[in-house]
Length: 366
Ligand code: SAM
Ligand code: DTB
Ligand code: SF4
Image (cartoon, rainbow, N blue to C red; front, side, top):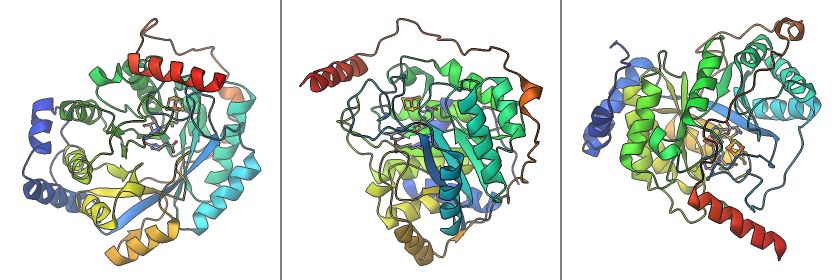
């Protein structure tokens, strides 16, 4: 097996992305087979444990409080509700539950304690548990690890340059810091991004440089196609073409050969033939369930039908890394240190986001 490289340059990645498609597919599929079973797909179920009302201004996100979108917001779910949903997900073939919260960052206190209890509860069901809760401090990452968390999802979303056009309320370096904090524990890192936000192909390559030069590389990389939601600053973005998704997946596979590449948001727009090409190009995981966090996802039965047609099997839990141990009396060991993520770019404004906010205020006044 070839060594994983951590010194990729943007030019090299662009050359890969722009190869003739047949050459790109052949190279990606060959590498995929070296490191993974090409007929196995890992299935995760997303669960929005706290929906909407987020203070951030991420231009793609329907959960940002400042935009007028049509989502039903919800306070933090109870542990029992989460357990019931996790059991349903397990029964439908999912090996991982990914809990998402519309938070800028985790705050120590009763809500975080409740999330830790959710992690312990799902872990006891022999399922992998992932969380995506916004920024975490090193201490909070350790507490999640102690509760038995398997993966933490925190996306870089795009290149460092384009990030400034998408989000003004936190910086790229804040994202990288959270990934670093998670890396200090035994929790695996899940980090990827979105295509179709108006970025250039060079921005896509830039994001892959940022991810592939991490050492170790993330264990899981979600590639999302933007779901353009009415009311967000990106409501008018045109859907990405399937070829762009295939190229992005294949390039990710080539520069991060050992990583689980997740075909994430945007699958409702893709045919099963298009998705099959993504699996051939190296995607080996998906989010299943009729909802992502707030937007639709293909029906579970449709996904199972597609898997049968393609001869794909679903991956069992804990194949890639062992089940983490839940350590019971964890809270007192890691008392809050009062760490607070900083706001790295005060005063930074993005015209597209400001316009969407203005439009939202006008709609709210009507
Ligand atoms: N609040 C936390 C955070 O931002 O880290 C966790 C939840 S957030 C919704 C998780 C990820 O979902 C984002 O980083 C983004 O990559 C993805 N996402 C959000 N809205 C999306 C959309 N409309 N289309 C595609 N991906 C989206
Ligand atoms: C990721 O990269 N994609 C998922 C998961 N990580 C949390 C979220 C997709 C969200 C799509 C928009 C929504 O449903 O709100
Ligand atoms: Fe909030 Fe996360 Fe949505 Fe950004 S992506 S607005 S941080 S929920």
